[in-house]
Amino acid sequence: MHLFKKENGNVERVNFSNSYKFVIDLVNVSGITYLLAQNKNGQLELYTLDKNNWKLLFQKNLIPMKFLKSIDKSGVNSALILALGENDKQIILDINGNNKTPQSATNNDKFYQLSNDTKLITGRFAKIWQLNGIGPINVNSKNEIMAIIETSIHGNKETLVFTGREDDTLDNKFKIYSSKDNYQNPIFNRDGIGEFTAYFAREVDGVILIGSNNGFVELIKDKDTFALQSPSQSVLPGSYNGSQLSKTKLNDIIPISNKTVYILTQGKGLWKIENKKLTKE
Image (cartoon, rainbow, N blue to C red; front, top):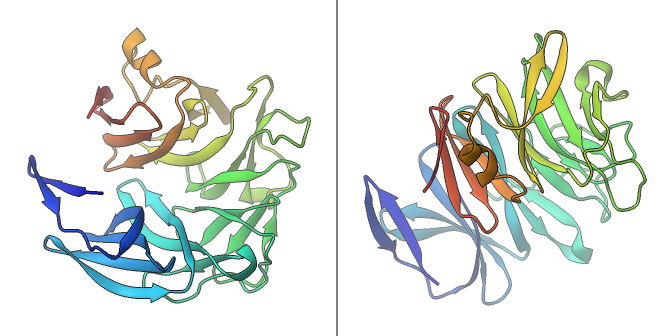
């Protein structure tokens, strides 16, 4: 297994430790690159990149899963570590190794996405967990929620969560809930959207991009309400731009600025939207 770094157009190999069994995830926060790995003993290890070598920060008797990334309009602003502990209980750590798991979380709870203000995490059973709070906020939804974003696109600051259809429910509407009414009634729903499930949401240049199991769509403000549409404001119109990422499962959408966005896909590689032009990297 090899890892490479691209800097100023140059690609060079980064030295790897022989102790790794699996490299799980990689993230850059405030100019520091962190690598989440599992060693040959099955333990979690966190490293930072020091020049071209990896420096071990800490090791835990946990199974690493991924980084929970808080992503705002300029990129990743913070990250937490999601891991498995005893009896498959999900554990949340900060990058210093401190346990940040909500106190009332049980073995049945799962954590999905960290909000762009780093204070909230969506979870199983339509819950929103407060990192510094005692208990979760319950969304009045029969479906799971994953995507979460704090935004002012609707005029005033609010937190939005997004839902899709689960296999164990007949409700196939795509819905959006708001913190304005404590997530009790959907402020937007869409019939006939089928298998669309929102994985994450990122705001770029006044448009919320929703990544899903079926490409990505735009959520825009339409007078006093919301409108959901295929990419047209974030990407220049045209058959090429409209077809390349349709029906493509996305791993992430990461804004670098209000004009540049990277899109990580499953099976179609890395793409970039820059000044509304879509190109493959």
